[in-house]
Length: 345
Image (cartoon, rainbow, N blue to C red):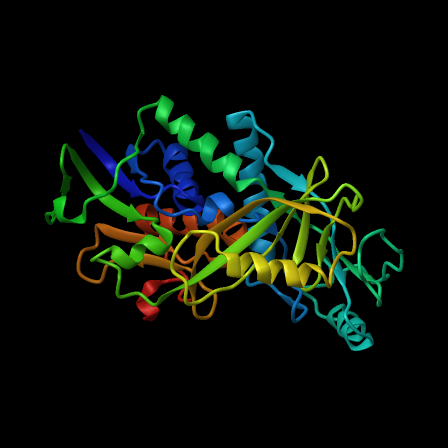
């Protein structure tokens, strides 16, 4: 079999790049072994504001302008609903917190996203002494449903193999790549944390941050917005809420832990005061990079080997943009931005 591209990994990064290939009528084969779960368990929230410091997310405007139509197109293509719009309400912890919000309103990159009028309502079950600030242009992509539906879409067309990619079986020639029964011009590795085992790109400074989330059932809470406080509380419907998330830099497993569960329970005590039951706990490894910029580009020696990785906690926003930039770099010779190009390392 001869194809233009082999794609290794089908989370958000691989999915976004595959969409570029389909649009350009390029041929490909995807390999996915379910070893990485970050895209499947992610909260999937898109938010242009870093609420911890009231600063704009890197390239937020550009990313949203590309990402939102991208997911809208996928909803039609796959006949699924994955984009849910809602307001994020930031619960202020102090008067100083409120004042920092008003200061942020003067920043040109934030004025379109922050409402100047504070929300002083009381919401049953929500602990908030100093009112709320509303963030606009926000919502959630159901990443689990998207990735699972997309994998099924590719499976029906024989464009994906659910097998572990064996690096030692890759034969690199000057003009062609050979992998078992496949000849390809290029291979793109979108493996997330799995890149640590990739002999071609494991030199890149990818950090691993384990994140754990709870799904709770809280019939008395009844909120239709994402509550951002010590942690986030995200409504899923049917009185279910996703709660998260932890950051663990030492545990490299994707298994839910009792430690993570207890951390979330303790933090949740400061956020809501209504009864709830835990119905699920999930965990995944976020592929993060110092400076919060993704890892994109070609291998320093073998130009047919390419990486698309390091999307971190904002993969929903970043993936469509960087996938598009990578495609145009490979196919049309457009220059990759220095802040995402792996040549910076």
